[in-house]
Amino acid sequence: MSEIVQLIGTYEIDGQKDVHLIELGIEKNHQNIDVGQITQAQEGIDKMNWQTPWDEKFLNFDGTMIIGDWMDTPKDTSNFTRLAFFLHFLNFEKPLLTQFGEIDLIKPVILPDRLRSIITYEKPN
Image 1 (cartoon, rainbow, N blue to C red):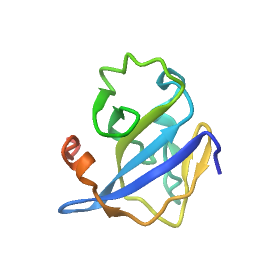
Image 2 (image 1 turned 90 degrees about the horizontal axis):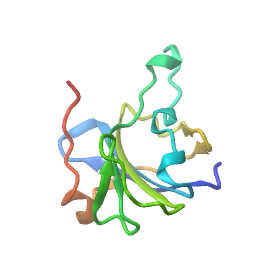
Image 3 (image 1 turned 120 degrees about the vertical axis):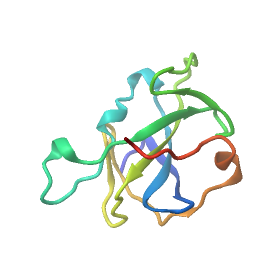
């Protein structure tokens, strides 16, 4: 269990059963976070092929506005990062793995309006 990363929420995506939105609060500046290290172990699959975040968004402190993404990182220099991303094929019995430790997942709930109004799921090509 990580003391640096807190799971804010796990959310269902309308019309999608194999993808969820994950929202994390991380007690680090975004420049010190390797989003590519966020994953979940998958038995029988090479670690290089484990799922990683898709279409990550950096959010403001209260999670109501996008302040950056994977191409345009935030200008914010605070030591708190609110990150939302999609992850495919989650196993809710296994933790997320991060560079800061493991994060236990919770059962998904309906996507809150504050996120529904700013984040849209687009399938990977």
